[in-house]
View 1 (tube, rainbow, N blue to C red):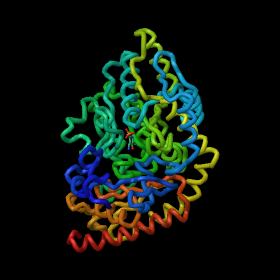
View 2 (cartoon, protein in one colour):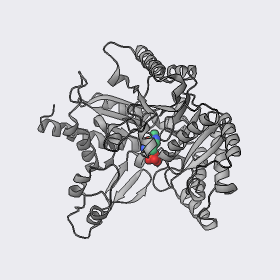
View 3 (cartoon, rainbow, N blue to C red):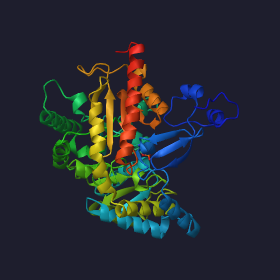
View 4 (cartoon, rainbow, N blue to C red):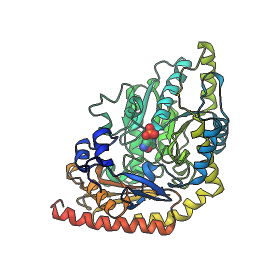
Length: 463
Ligand code: PMP
């Protein structure tokens, strides 16, 4: 890796000038960045031309990999025709209309309208505002509290970071804001009590949710946000009956539900939507990332007809619907997203995911036999291994030991980019175009990294 110490290197200039997202800023000055220069298929290459398998599709997003010419063509064509326009004040562009039609046709729920934003955070912020607006319009001015879950991830803007249930997103940012509250994380491996069956665990979480709502006052609770699989919180899959049980409680108290499909949407779990995989029937959906295979930033909020009707009437009364982003529904991003969705269909991406997922999941499951792996989990083309100090007691390593980060660095040495999350969870979420032989290559590289991690853990006396 090029050292930031080399004067005028890209690494040194980066350290001098760039404030990095989600980075240990002190460490960054010493180690510098990995400078990624180009991509091809599931691979990316650094400025020394070292090859890496992108085991996370970037940030769970580049579904079609890093060299899809048809998306480049779609962008160029739209750029030439009309590089920018917006939807404010009764304007529109063709790609936005066509993308809305396409998303409605793909939606698992009856959708009235689609609102476009630029990223997942903006989509979720929009949803909070829409839900507050909707309840105000209905005269339910106290029904405003939004529930999300511990370890959930919904973004980093003030409201969406408040929804996120991870300490680093709250601590020292004066978050969460009022009226956003967190409920249980449905991770059976970590949070089941001794001897508790999965069914008992689910029943306890549903009861806790109901108790929480009753304590808050059902007339004050507006909505519940959940990712079908918790992504950045550690690729956490809910037990089979979790969503139906939770939804029963939400429906009882007239609480709206949101499926944050920013990671799970567009085939990742083997269905178009993660909600379908887990028996979740939300009122709203937010999506982004694989919507455009990440080639350009765009997100969407799927709004049910009855909510739209109320918002429409209210905006008619007050003169305007006062929400929207300059770059929301950018025509170039919309053209690329539309082309992405067409490619998913033309190339039967769902069929492909379901064809290669058994190989991916077999390799993940096999990692579960490794002495460092407490739990290996996944579905479709997403998965994780949770590294532990003691498999039997599930004891984690001290967070300061940096075992996950060490494993991630060993993987990088082996030519594999993966993501270490809190609790030493290593995530895998490769481009959906990955083939069976590439899946094998990815896990072969990871197994070598895990062997190195194991020796390092022993040398450090960490287990
Ligand atoms: N929701 C989920 C489930 C996500 O994974 C993310 C991003 N990782 C977001 C929302 C926020 O999206 P963005 O970073 O585009 O704002």
